[in-house]
Structures are given as structure tokens and as C-alpha cells.
Image (cartoon, rainbow, N blue to C red; front, side, top):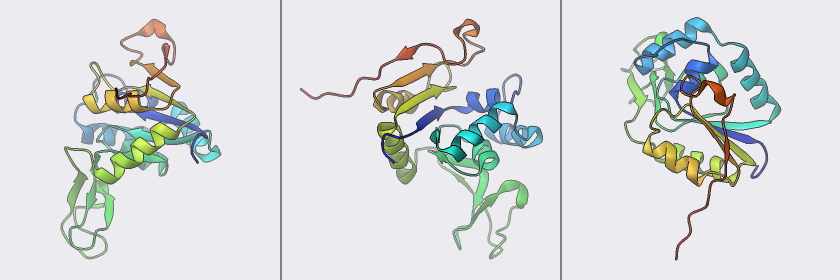
Length: 187
């Protein structure tokens, strides 16, 4: 529903912090495996409850690891897909990489369910979620943030809260300073 609930715009660093992992996660597949070993945590459980209650409407995720989708199972819009999920070119079924490399339905070969460029349907869904939310929180996009992350944050609803990773700004608190996103205007 437009205007109800909060939307989170998160990058891969957010997953690292939500799971309480230390250091650089490395490649997306390494982050996915570390997330599964860890199995969640207190912050991830709060996020799950927020999604279930409707307080958090959705999460727009710019990481490519797939960990949030796997651990939360719903409410995550993956703009690029996930390197940890496979897709069958024959029948279209999707499954997680740790379930095997062949399609469980037809036996076809698995291909990564990931793209270097944003997927149109997911990007449209992300833009809708971000521009119709009551408020948007932006976190973990990296330093400097990717161009797409910056554009999505600027296009977000009129109330956007932006934060760097806590490891970059330890005294900033959980969410940093509040900033109003300005809509694009044509002259």
C-alpha cells in the first residue's frame, strides 16, 4: 500500500552488520555462506518481525549475495538478483546453490540468477517501493555509494534517513543524520 510502512534501501555492508560478521565479507558468495553459517542474529530477527507486522514494508537490496532473501524468505527486492541462487534455462525454476547445480525439477543445468545490470522488473518494483513509502532508511551502500544506490536514495520518498556503515562513523549512532531527499524538478 502506498504511503504505509517503511522501506529499507540496503547494501552488502548492511548484511555484514545485521549478522554481526567482522571484516570484509569478500565475494558475494562468501558473504552468503557466512550468513548461512551464522543463521541470523538479534537484528535480523527484529527485521523479520518488522516485515511480518508490516512496519517494514520491504527491503530494496543492492547486494548480490542473496543472504537476506534466503534468511528472511519474503519482502526483499533484489535489484541484481543473487549469485547464490540458480535458475534453470529449460523450465525457469529457481533454487539455492547449496541445493545442487542441477535443476531439481527437470535436471537441467543451473545458471546464476544474477545480472551485472539491474533487472527491469526488480528495478521498477524498487522504484515503486522507494517512492511510495512513508519513510526510507538508507544504510550500508559503501564508500562511495554506487551510482544506482545514490539515485535510488534521491528518488525515494520525501523523508529519507541516510547512514554510513557504523565502522566508518562510530559516533553517529545507529542511523546517522536525517536528510530530506528533494524530488527532481524540470524547468
